[in-house]
Amino acid sequence: MDLLAQILINGVLLGGLYAVMALGLALVWGVLNIVNLAHGAFIMLGGYLSWHLYTYLGIDPFLGLPITAVVMFCLGYALQRGVLNLVVRAPMFNTLLITFGLEVVLTYLAQLAFSADFRTINPSYAGSSIALGPVVVPVARLMAFGVAVALTVGMWLFLLHSRLGRAIRATAQNLVAARLYGVEPRHLYAMTFGIGIGLAGAAGGLYGTVSQIDPYIGATLTAKSFAIAIIGGLDNPLGVLVGGLVLGIIESLTVLYVGATFGDVASFGVLVLVLIFRPSGLLGKTA
Amino acid sequence: MKGLRWILLVAALVVLAAVPWFGSDVLVQFGINALLLAVLAQGWNIIGGYTGYASFGNSVFYGLGSYGVAIAMVQWELPFAIGMVFGVVLAVAFAFLLGLPVLRLRGHYFAIATLALAQVMIAIVSNLSIAGQNIGLVLPPLNDDRLFYELSLILLIAATATVFWLTRSRFGFGLIAIRENEEGAAVMGVNTTLYKVLAFALSGVFSALAGGIHAYWITFLDPASAFDISLNVKMIIMAVFGGPGTVLGPVLGAFVLSTVSELLSSEITSVAGLFFGLVVVVAVIFMPRGVADLMRRFRATGWRYFVKNLKAHRI
Image (cartoon, rainbow over all chains, first blue to last red):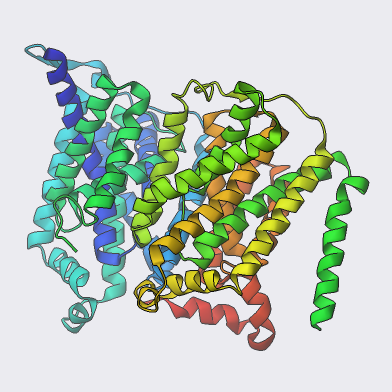
């Protein structure tokens, strides 16, 4: 029973992190109708950026997150404005291919720049944990979970109440009507993509504190983010949070009861099942 | 003109077939790799280029073909040919069992579902004792590069002939109709589900055969290399660069990119990977219909061809 409680806690903490990973992907997908296959590679870049800030400048990974997010935001804004804008109205097939190409480029650039060795961000409190009765909660994971939930709720409030957030939602619903109301689509698309990549960067920083970063983590993280976005639907960041928690718990339970190598099988199996039976997401509207 | 084309084609084939008799060992080994990649690109062309379903899971077929041969030869001590048949059976079974549900998905959903399947296969095969778990299997060695080269060439010719048949058969027209407008195709009486699954299976057969030849040639395989996702990267990029939905485009793309990548990787390995990524980004922006379309139109439009593509889909 204690073991089960521990596994559930681990799953929930992991799930919060998963939610931030998927948040940017779901936002870009919902607004630009681009499934960014390079999303995981941006998470990887964010992780390396946090690692460098911590290792060479001594900036705490959690305090450094805003820096990582802003730098990644600028990268995302520029990429959308300069490259992806050229294909934004192309058939879906082409946008999949171009982001796939970006993924390959980023992976190999990272390999050239950072080598294939894996890195972990290890602040002084990395090993410490809090005991809650029989259950042990690692501090770094708890902090990552807290930041993740705060980011998700913040994103939700931003989309709901801010002027830019409303413009983003309006564009997602109807580009032509949004244009008539004065939305400049090139700027708005770039802002949206930038926010998505900024979130990916923050997720990467958090990921680096609880797991290992190497240049090749991108593809798996993209597929997981996609699974979460599918489970949670694209309409609402809170749905993505639920999706992340579901996936985190399923993975932790599978690792315990079936075997460590089956964690990914479970999450992708869930993805395929959800796609087949509810293609618009567990919480999404039916198509 | 038409006759001249056939003569050129036959001449090119004769030269290709003769390579093992005058080329060096290195050239023959490079040739086997390039031919097998061309088969994979051509196989992907059937489901991705003609049917319009971006499969990121064709490496699963390749892996199944490799393991079909390896399991038959190592565990059951059967000859290579029966192993190939076994690999094909596995691939077709996979295409029907998982293709039926997955091919109901459109666009992004299909692409990611196949990507997920490819990752799941590595984990599953790593846990099967008949497949040697994550240690892998070692096949009996056969030191005959000429044989492997000619087998690969024959397979490529068969794949290309199949794609050529698609361009002038009822089945192929059905696939193209699905690519252009799936509802429209269904209204016109195309059994879309059946056609899509058959296209997936056909594309799988060629990938599996390529995997089988490669396994026997390399004589060793493990889950990570047999179901290597970067192989998907290569076959898609080669098909897109050459011209998806054309008969010779993917073959051309595979030969050109294999050569460039071989030259680059003699310098630094990761530069070749970087190059592949850049090629696909630039190709999607400037020539989304590949080299085959470029060669057809460039004479008439000149450099404006690139400008026109650049302006076509921006906002």
